[in-house]
Every structure is written in C-alpha cells, then in structure tokens.
Length: 404
Image 1 (cartoon, rainbow, N blue to C red):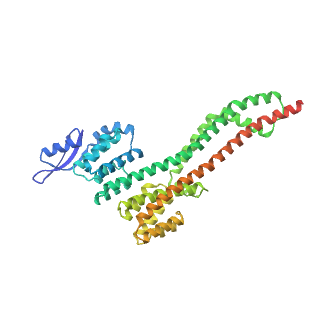
Image 2: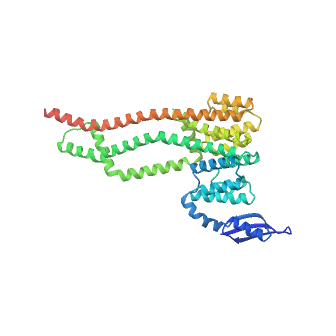
Image 3: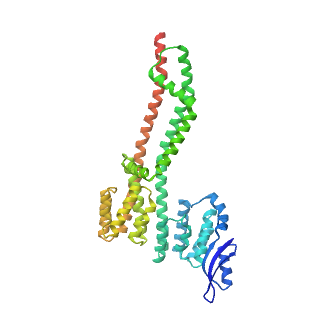
C-alpha cells in the first residue's frame, strides 16, 4: 500500500515523498528507523481506493447498532481503567463486522501515532457526525471520556428506539394497505371479468355503479402497463420536485400543519434536537457549539430555521427560551422548563429532563395515532369491498326479482 508522507530530518529540514508499507503503523516504524519525525502521513488516493473497494461493497457507513456497541464497549473499558489505545484494540478485536473492525483499526493506529481521539475521528467524517466528534473533543479536554461515551451510547439507543417505535406503528397500516391493494387487484382482474361476461350475455340494463366497476376492471386489465408507467413517472417527478429548495420548504411546513400527524412529527423532531442539546451540554460542550451542531440532527427546514434563530439570539446575549417561544414550534410547557433552567444556571439538567419527558410522551402519542389509523383503514377497506359486492349483486337481485 502506498503512503504519501511529510517528515522532518534531524537537521530540521523537511522531506516529502512516498513509501510502500503493509499498514499505517508499518509506514510510521519505517520512517522512524530512518531517523525521521513524521509530520503528515496519508494513504495514496489510488491505493486507498483499492483497499477500500471491498469495504464499500458492504457498507458506506456504520449502523446505529454498530455505534451503540462501540460506545458501550468503550464506556465499559475506560471506566474499568483501561488506557485509550488498549480499549480501542480490545473493541477492535471483539468486533465481528469487517467494516467496523477496519474502521477501529484505523482509529487505533492514528492514536498510537500520537493523535488525539478527536483528531483520529476527523478523516472518518462519513462515519461520525459533528455531534459525535464535538462531544469526544470535549470529553478529552475535560478528562471525561467514559461519561461522554455513555451519553453517546444513550443518544444512539434513543434514536434507535424512536425509529423502532415509528416503524412498528407503520407496520400494521402498511400490511392493511398491501392487503387492500391485493384484494382490489384480485377482484378487478379475476372476479369482476367473470361477472361482466355473465351480465353481458344476459343483455340486461345495468346499474351505474356496476358499469363503473366494469370500466375500472377493463381499464386495469388492458391498461396496467400504462398505469404502472404513470405511477413510476409520478413518483420520480415528485422526488425530483421535492429536491428543489422551494418545494422542500413548502413540504416541510405543510407536514407540520397536518392535523394530528403534523403535531407528532413536530414533537419527534424537536425531541431529537433537545436530546442532542442535553447530551452535549452534559458533556460540557459550549452552548453555542451545541446549538450549532444540533443542525446535523434534523433536515426539516422549519426546525433548521428554529436552530438558526436560537443560535442568533444566544450569540447576541439573548435567551434560548425566549427565542423558542417566538418560533411557535415548541409547547409552552417545554419552553417554560428550558427558560427556568436558563435562569437557574441548570440548562443541561433542564434539557435532559425535557428530552426524557418528550420521549415518553411521544411514544404514547405514536400509539394513539396508530390506534386511530387502524380503524380508518379498516373502514376504507370495508367501503371498497362493499362497493364491489353491491355493484355485483344488485343486478343479480334484479334478475332474480324479474324471474320471480
């Protein structure tokens, strides 16, 4: 593997060149044997790409579960008194996933070469977001890395728990929608055509609902390729449209204004922001940096605007609580709790309490929304199936009455 390096000779002059080595550690050892002091050492772009190509086929990022395992193991090892490098080595050896193992190996090698853990994380930005790196930097500066890893673990666990709650809430409605689509498709493609042939052979007048049902069946039977193509075109057009900044802003605000769902989405996003604030403030990250880095936790433009307003207010000597109240996106009780924490100098504790309370309240709200959606979908399914049954059986009843 090729490495490009910059090093200092014993006489104080510098040299920049390349060398071949099996790993970063071997390259450092080879340069030190030559009496050189390593100033900069990077893998050659081509060789790095070749070495990482197999890695990229599997994953371009570590999962939340990988992050939870890593932070939990580091917290346990550091709290038990293990130095940083042995802790990284032990975590690397205990990891079965090749992607994560290679990542931890790179971190360990950089720390062995004298980098701080925060500096070692910098080249791995695609794996570790700014919130993670800022908390690690503060943990190193305040000698509180075990506590920081514990908070990072809690942060990742809560994110995973919220995702599971949302996916679990959507699972049953999604199954109902698939069943509804399947039932309607079977009725229109296989059942309705048989009745249509029967009724046409009888040459009797048909109700309007039956004619509409037969037209839908014929349209789906003969025009399904066009229908499928139209759906694909619409989906692609919607995706491309929503990537436009103006459309994205409109969509973000529209979702927040939806009844029931909008309030739930707003609370979930705000809980995520407050959770990041709490974790970073508990780790002694400066307030302005915590506010700024929390942008990485959201994509909704309305909440990005909220964070910008809070940052501007705090940077000019204002209060966080006052700025939150002005946006209208936070509940008054939450604003009051944060404002009280500011006034008493306990903002970290206040945001920690608020994030925990919101997580519990949001879990209950997700259950309520799910319970509301389930009967609505069942009613829709019943109406569609009932319409099909009525449209098919009404002509039969008319025929039976005429025959009687």
